[in-house]
Amino acid sequence: WPEKVDHYSIYIDRVRYVWAREQHQSDRQHYHVFIFLNQEDYKDLNNSNILRHRLAGKIQEAWCSALKEMPVDVFKTLVHFPEHCVYYIHADRAPHEVEEDRGEVVYRASYLAKDKTKHYGNGYRSFGCSQY
Image 1 (cartoon, rainbow, N blue to C red):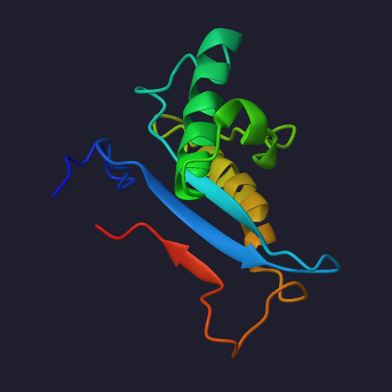
Image 2 (cartoon, rainbow, N blue to C red):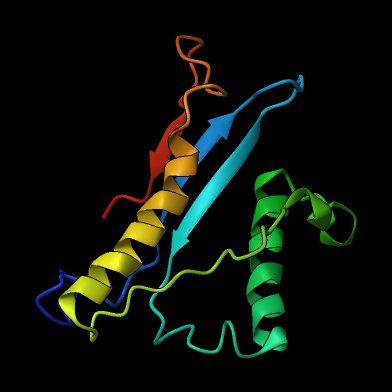
């Protein structure tokens, strides 16, 4: 098991994710991914455009690879990063502040759960997540 940092049960050694498959008015499906990272490992994500772009580049490369080796320089625009896409839960803050942080994260993640764009019963999963 990963090492616990404190009583808030925040684990420090694994990247975790949740994904949702959607299709609305387009004839194509699209995916939303919510990635959970440890700020200590990615602490400069908001402080350095170079590091932010480096992480974004890794995500774009991974997506192009999943799409059967599509050239990243051509297809990287298939990955979109929304504004305000980084949220923090600061475990060392007062409990009510931690809950505020969590509330913001849960609210943002709830976008993946909207039912309007999900298609059930067609043999495809609409949700998935990391499993450790």
